[in-house]
Length: 417
Image 1 (cartoon, one colour):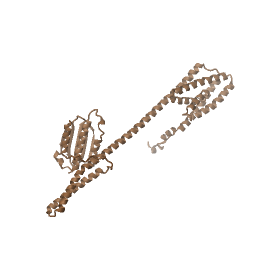
Image 2 (cartoon, one colour):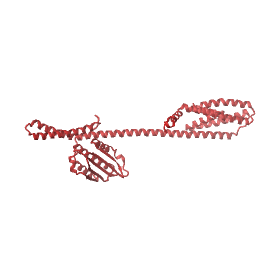
Image 3 (cartoon, helix red, strand yellow):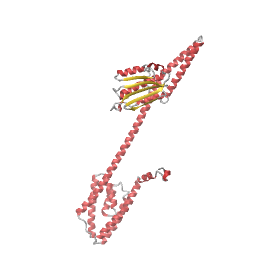
Image 4 (cartoon, one colour):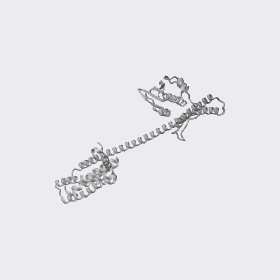
């Protein structure tokens, strides 16, 4: 139900829980409970003494008058003395001489047991047995009320004290376990956050590197178009004797080259839009791949022992020569990464590589069997992040994942001439 349905604020219960977790509230509750539970113990004890026909009623009255203030003080002090070892030992002694203080004495004994200290537990056991039996003997001598046999008193008081100490020990062990689990959970959460941040940083760095690589790959294509423009513009400037048809042809060539250069420039700027001045870049001395490089990549993979099955659907290898330079370069880069990814994660397994033209889109699919027990530490998955970045910058898409015991990657980019 919502707040409007019940008419009560949804935070009422959490607010009460938060209030009970405050130390001063818990201390006040302990003091109140010990003070309220003390009188029944006092009245039962006094009734038993009166029923035993004491010889000296004056001495019994004196003990009763001593019992009440000690019990009241112990009940009130039980809450604030929660963390005081000496204070709780005093409460244990108070329980030996005051029946009213027995609830506070029990609480103090449990607290001391929760410290899980064997010497401290031995001291508590010695205090309760020693002071309890000594006070019982003094009370019997002054009031004339017969006391229980000494061995019975020692065993009874010792057993009760030992029970309370073990109860406290169990509570202390549980608190320590909860604290340890909480620390481990916090440490695991910090490690998870650090891992996620590191992973995000690696992905961002890989994307920046890939954008720089794409921009470098496009540079040669842009330079080629600008060279065509410069050559034909120079011819128009120095050859005023050209016939009108040749001039129109040269002007058309300049126009087409300028349009191609403008498109390449837009892609370069798009690739560089998120790369900062400190982003890493690849060396520009490596020659750019061409559509013919696809065959070299496949043959190189086969020579390295990788079984590659290449299929063409809706196009022939020669059709790739008409692709725009940026698309052709990206196609070769993507194919290289797909073969390398399969070699890392499924060594020895055959790779199915499909190039397909579907309408105005060029699709590259790679599939291989998933190797049982393959270690994910062989790769970070950042290579496929770079593949997806290339596809996105070209206006395409990339998807990858396991399907029916096979790992498949599909990259789809626009078919640009």
